[in-house]
Length: 211
Image (tube, rainbow, N blue to C red):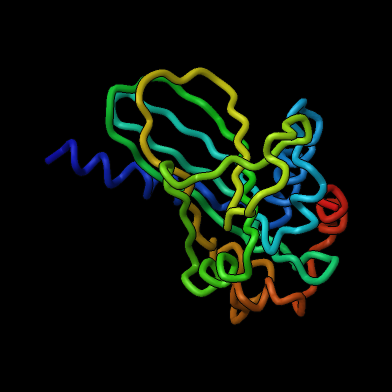
């Protein structure tokens, strides 16, 4: 019973810690995007240009038999050639298995269809299972060019040491409290992503990094 309680409590604790402001999340997200673009496997500009929506997350995890992860970030919807104001999102999860260590992950999730964006905004949560995830193409990998485009791409950069079996995927949900603090008590995630809500100062720098 205690084992089950820990498995349930870990993701809840991770979520509770994700209270960073939208402005702080924008700064983190800018660092994540620039980190990818400075790597040898940079995200091609065409991936961002053709995206319908993008989530940028910074996640940390630790484990000793039971694993827990948590982090935060932002989601933005493509509005013609521009982007919407950032929607604050949180990520949290738990895993079981033989594992030990700690790590941090920078994650970019690219939604390539209007349906994927609508599903997230309508439900307030989104997930990619490990078995169905598709890694996005990189500038240095011509094998990914051409062919049908999947509904979602993911990009992950990992720091730290981690050993053992980790089963799961990437999951996130809207951080409603943080969004209300930035945009007002009655503004929904759908409204923030509609392009009609004024973006916070500094959002233009993040938009530029993704264009």
